[in-house]
Structures are given as structure tokens and as C-alpha cells.
Image (cartoon, rainbow, N blue to C red; front, top):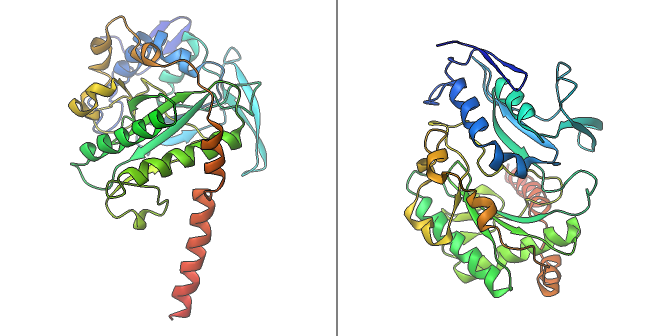
Length: 319
């Protein structure tokens, strides 16, 4: 079998190399998966600044935001000022098959687009809740239970969302937005939804940002707003077995496990369909009372930072 080939003008090399230790997949498997799934993946990447996680041979996985100098001129990009590093970042826009193949050849395993599109940085297109399980192997059932709490909180607010596995051990819940709400409004609404879901069953779910405060509960992460990224639907993950982030119907959520969906199994499971697009509801306006409630809830990261400093002072005072 040839170790290289050309597709859509992109030279693909070292295709028979293992993707990474424990991947149970080769670089060819990654390329073939992304190429076969391109009509589902590209719509969720298009016009969104893209970060990728690459896995080079003999190196730990790393996130790449800034495009390297050797990037082909036909790869579209957008310049974004990064306050944290005080510099301009050149993000890729993965809008076509050729760009996706080039990334695959760069051993880009994971694809993390922003929640905003180019040209409209002030208005997220989706509200997203990220559910993280507590430590341990037998916790996905807890995640399912917590996801159903979020679904109930959404329904009580007059909203509907879709769910997908994260490709790791959790799930992501997406709500498409209408009316161009601001970053601040979306962030506030997400905090309120997390708090409402937590109140339904506080023994199962928590909004505690500090890990040691979660007490073995599922973390309802409400911080995926603004310039945050979320792994794309159908994106592979750089984890054992090379799982993928996969759409699941709400009624099927308690009958699946994230390990069910990999680069080897996912394409045949969906056939010619696109469950992420098919299950996505119409865009919805955020209720005013939800946003107002969220504005009364402290931002989790800021609150955690202040609490961390307070605890550090207390430890120093105790000697």
C-alpha cells in the first residue's frame, strides 16, 4: 500500500504511520474519515476561526491557533487580536475539502471552532453547556442524568437544544440562537440555565468551578461563551481509540457511550444522513427573565479566581 497520494491537489504523506499511541488508527484512517465526513464537518467549521489539536510523532498533543508560515496561500485565514498574548493571531477558516485534507496531513486530529463567525464577533450563534463528569470510569450515566436536568431547565424556559458526546467522557448541549444576542447576554443566560438545572437535583449536578468543590457531581460548565471554542460535531479526539464527538438523540442518550463512536464506526452509523443538522432546532430568542437571572450570578472563572486567592491567604495565615 502506498504511503502517500494526492487528493484535490493536496499531497498526503506517511499515511501508514500510526496516528498516535493507543489510537487504533493510522494517519490514513484520519484522512479517510475526514474526507468521507467532510459534507457534515465543513458546515460546522465554515467561517469560524479554527483551533486544532495536532499530534506529531513522538510529541504530546498540542493546540495550534496561529497558522504556521508554511501554510499554503489557498488556506483562508482571519486575523484576530488576542488580549491575553497582546498579539494578532492568524486563524484558519476551514471552508473546503482541500483545507480539511491539508489539516489532516498536518496530523490535526481535533477541530475546535469558535461560537462566533467572522465578521460578527459580537453575537454567538449558539448557547452551549459543557457537562464534565467527575473522576472515574463509570460516570457517563451521571452525565446523562445531568444532561436531562439541563434539557428540563431549557424546556421550562421555552427553549430546545440538541446533544452530542464530547468525544471524551462528557456531552455538549447546543441551543441555536435568534435575535443576535450579545456575548454578555448569552453568557448570562448560560449561567442561569446551569443554576436552574443544579437546583432541580443538586445531589447530581453542580456549578462549582473549583474542582475540589464538586463533590463527585457532574460539572455544568457555563463558561463556553464569548471567544471560547467547542470541539466540532463529528471531530475526532486525540484519545485512546480515536473517538469522535457524535450527535445523539435525547431518547437514545441513556443507551450509548462515547466509546461507541470512533473514526472507524461513525461513518457507517450515520450513512448518508447528517444527524447534527437534522436534529438542530430552529434558532430561538433568549427569554428576558433568563438573561436577567444570569446577570445576578457571578462569572464562574472570576469567582473561582477570587476564591482561590482567599484560600491561599487563609493557608498562609495558618502557617
